Image (tube, rainbow, N blue to C red; front, side):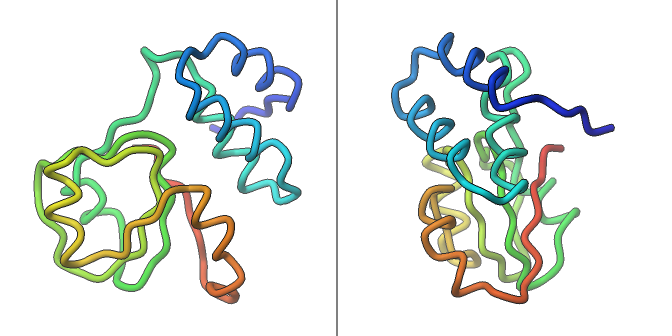
Length: 129
């Protein structure tokens, strides 16, 4: 179930964060006009205990070839990917990067926002578990 969280509440959560890179990204996402980016900011601003970590095998099971996905958290290395994807995430573990670079285009979330015009007409979705 999706819950609505205001940009003000996201800003309050952001102030509690100590990771400067994460704080900057949340601020940048809040300034975007599309609701998709607001949803990503909401997930990134959650408490550390509720942060998102996803293994490659979970991504493999829930996606189809040529999809564009956003993981508002960290991707871990367990499993393998058997189809082509474009993946944007806040962080990738080193082993996950090594495995994914062969089958997927890896981007930071900010890079995806800047290149989103190249993906017009394609469905972009958020994977949270």
